[in-house]
Image (cartoon, helix red, strand yellow):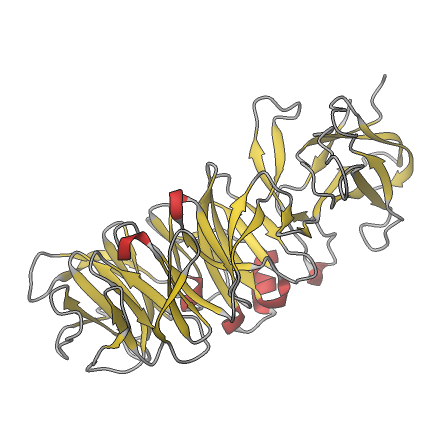
Length: 459
């Protein structure tokens, strides 16, 4: 009963003419009860939470801050949004780019690159600053923090004076000369991200110099863009100046391969941005790379996948926060529409989700005859009526390394209640070395978990 390999991460090297391995709208997981010991789970679907009215530029929520409401910047308006989706305007935020929002028990601050604005729940007020270009804002240990764009400086002010900033209250790079792109607050520490280096500080307890340098700890590794930095899993993730995705540790740990780096190199730096969220035992770092797509790194399993939305070149959510009941609220950065996630639905607010996996097997002899191919996957969960009442799975094959593909073939995933339905394809043909390559695809709004693919089984 030969088992065929299924891709667990996407891969393609255009410059090396390598076949493409696709893992689209799935994520991988080990499973003790699966026949193969592993499963491919469909990504969560999107449930409408609130219709948007402009580009989503920033979103933030923290328990205890503004009664637990969401603060979002959509278009040029800042909103306070409650758990029912009711939005109250709290002011105007100029510009069109991504903004950074931070908060504490008293209120929130929004940095848009031109202004720093503060709200205790009502209308935003502009903070008078002794510097220009506030490109990042954060909060740690009783202090507000703000990076002055184009400089090496990160300013600070106590909680007691959120609208008064002293020109002498700043930290600057101690071991490098590159500009500060942003900071991140992770595990009670400040990570200062420069163009070619990263330094670390910790709360010192000294009101005159509240943050001290961690001596002997610095990265000789910079950051490509502020908007790729995400604090997750008690560390930080970012895209380096070398266009490799990193995770912080004793030293920066490279997470991406040449495929991801090639994608990043194909687009402008401003088109690369990230966010992250926890989901059912997994933690995902979601990296959108312009029109190359959205690539999702599963921190739990250390595997990549590509997620997309119907008729789009990326996954619609481009920002998110941990919402009400500790469930993610995610937003479309183009329209400002907000969604909740669900593992129980298989559409994006009614639009189909196309799941696709590449599979294959090496051929050590002259050729391989595939008389039958079986896909071990969930069946019998068809909808009662409409799309999905007779769901199908498609497969196709390439006999020349993925250059030319044959037609799609289909088999049923079983009517409702037909849980014993076996998905199989007969007379798949001959394949020559170095290997066989195939793809499977599901688009009907039904469960589509895959546990393995097998060829030439005896019955």
